[in-house]
Image (cartoon, rainbow, N blue to C red; front, side, top):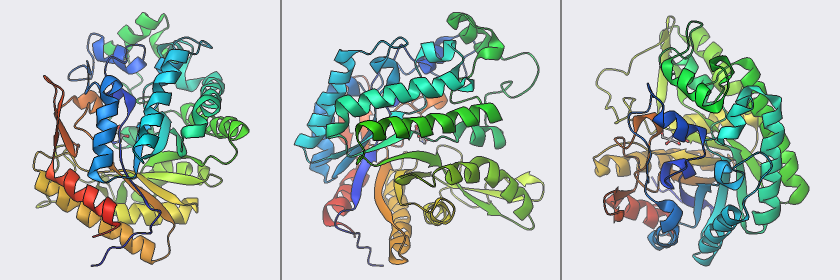
Length: 413
Ligand code: NOJ
């Protein structure tokens, strides 16, 4: 198949501050990594020290052939206490944006990627509508101070993540039950001076109230950004698996899909774009979620190697949201890099079919630029197209990076 992409198509890789920068000590996630009973298998530590090594990293990504880079600005660094903004932290991100521009990478910036400042969680977190206002204030500040260098903004990464984890039974044990909260919540809440029932972090809180606050935060953020920079494209990103129904599983699938995808896609209707983040599929029978299909290869994340999921979710996002899409994340965790290249080839063939059918898909960002901190799973799952020796912080380019970079350079394959 001949896969030609439009000349202005965005080709990039994606990272998130907490997963690559290192020492994000003022965030709720850092706190969770270090409390007794933590659900995180290891702490993030120095990560891949992107905070200091971004100049070389950005140069490397540009050399490989990409024309864009998606990274996140860390709210916990920019606003370490309620209402106190750090000019030094803002300037750090200004330097990153300038480095991108100097190397011909169009910067796509995410303003919230799972981690929140500790003070936000201490004040009620994502169950408190005041968080929507605080988030919008921070977004407006970034738009004002850095918007001149930013190409597009993702307000919140994977607005639906906690709901997806909750519906699929993937929350840390004890968190969703009505009994005694798990030890890590008790300890984290105590460290913040609040009761365990008032601990509502972005990754794990999945109530209707939290959903409303998150979507309000997005709406308020869009307004705050547009007030500063009316022409800057803004959207949110959504975790979208291809949810398939098997032998009569349609009703179950549709109910779950409504809760974890539709309400969020519907909320994206007025936006400039919606970010589609797809890794695999999930199958449902009449009794609920099914295990991976026998014979289908599994990735290091224990879900199926299923690159065709991306084409399905792009079509679904267009159908429900009806706005342009950008693939803001796609990839697999595997130690066999030949499988990564094979995955990207098949996923991109799906994107090309969508484009041929007239869908307005504007870009593709591989997750991830580097092997990095996969949240509670630590450093074991490797999603990067560039490996990192974390003792020396040496970067080692994988063959999949060369392949994808060439595709980016040539606008197809
Ligand atoms: C989605 C998240 O945005 C990202 O932080 C995570 O590492 C990847 N998926 C892989 O699981």
